[in-house]
Image (cartoon, rainbow, N blue to C red; front, side, top):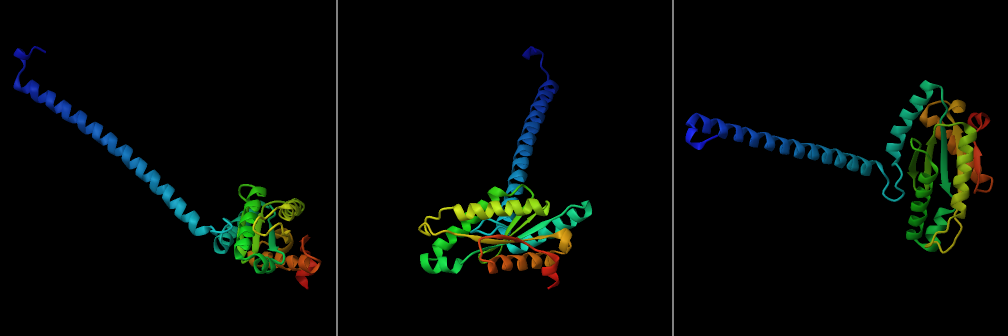
Length: 218
């Protein structure tokens, strides 16, 4: 446009177009910042939630978080006609490890065993620290498959080398109980697995046993 032919109305229109363009660009920038902020807040919320649910030593679920998720797993599996297996795990003679090598060695053992559990389990399986050196696992599978997984875990722990325990062999006992055998009630199922765990310890430790209805009745 020839400046000589420009009019005040023309200049005002150009300025208005320029102002609108700047506003649009600013809004786009704000939208990007807003989206990034929402994304970061969402990630922070997940991080905080995970930290609250996870045991800081074993990196497994805390007992309360495990039990909440177990209830959902049992309800879902029952509705679909699938089975759920509970594994109660106890590290054999764990107090002796603490007494002989110190609590740092005991912590190393717990942390390493927690790592082994996560390596052998599938996405969707649950693993938690039930208390002290007692761990708990829930898997949606057949009893036979659960026993196979438990045996692999037991073997992996017995073959692991723990530096601070100075080569001392660490073993664990495992009790397995099936929801289709003992019911889809979490408390009853855990109690059956716990009885099976003590049967494994009474039989000499470093072994896997499976709960039977006769044990539950007793």
